[in-house]
Length: 485
Ligand code: ADP
View 1 (cartoon, protein in one colour):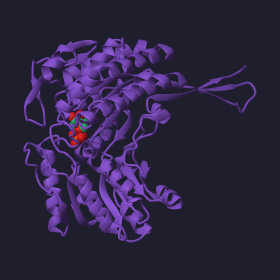
View 2 (spheres, protein in one colour):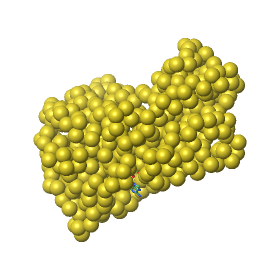
View 3 (spheres, rainbow, N blue to C red):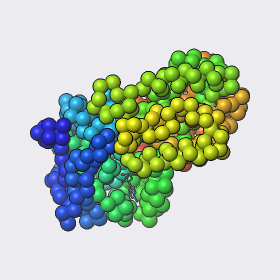
View 4 (cartoon, helix red, strand yellow):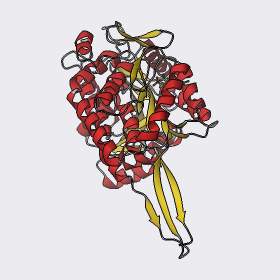
């Protein structure tokens, strides 16, 4: 597959600085692995501070002209990029499955979703309106202009190798910003292919740069530069906090999408088929490796046994394997550390009384494959309820009343995704309003879309991505007063 992709010209291994593909200055490389086989796929440039500073300089240079283009011009180029992403959907999906492990069908879904942010940004570029404010004095006129923030540093994780980039870069470019992207070192190939398509679309040199390698060094260079006016990050809460602190020195704008601890609340009055289907999608998608994956399944006592049985029956039918295999719905975890974390959390839970109802160990396929798992009798004191599992383990917690469910659900510093299954419209509203979460899925397990705002409450982050709200993250508001008329 890698050699096939090589022929298509989308297998890039160098960084992109000022429109030129570049090796790291000291010639160092890092290997990218296929998590399903443990095989090395490619050696990519391992860059650091020097390359990042040059990428920032290119982005700053490109910003001067890009920020002055018309919205219509930016829109056309973004639309072209979208068209190219869709035209190369299969190759992008293959690259993603190869380096990230997700089933090919899910990878194709991510290309649709990820490209959607570019399409939406192309449309929204034309709708960045200002305001005219009625003046308090008759000889004045008050205007509000919206202008791009400047050069953006975009740092992204491995779980959505395309979409986490496009949902940042799309709005940034639409608003007139230029970007230095640092994709995850675990999944740089999809990012580089997307960047190649941006060049093919005619997005000017320097508007999109990609550096990867030494993450802390690249991060520090982005933070230190007064020319970088905005940091947008998706990843762990720990790194997000560091970036926020590091942005203080130059007072950058910051958008953060950090860890979640999503509750999935199943009420007695839920439709059990819908609840099982929704939970399955919310939990096991991407092998449980998303920040909105259901982390705690809270089940009301009256439906607990019935729901647990139905969920186990459904989970038992999930086919685990290489993402390229037919009918596979669950691939490997990203790496050994991810498996170890799942093992540690499950061990802690069972030592405190939780019961494994299905799975609970490494899969016979080896490598980083893990059995789709259901574990019952979990409570809020166990680490599995307090930390992100980021793996295919569904912990079931029993609750009595609606008030209990809300209290347990909100008892966390995270506040990103949440899910509620009920057939009562009144309860849906009550619970949705009471949940301290940025996203609430009611009778739905997968709700992300480029047209709706995505983001967290509390320590799950700052700002929103996608939708008209996501554009504001890349805009400064300027007040202009025309006086003495
Ligand atoms: P995850 O658990 O999803 O890998 P991380 O927060 O470790 O979460 O990684 C998300 C992104 O942040 C990756 O691109 C990673 O390389 C990058 N990263 C990690 N540490 C730093 C750092 N100190 N400065 C800047 N970026 C970092």
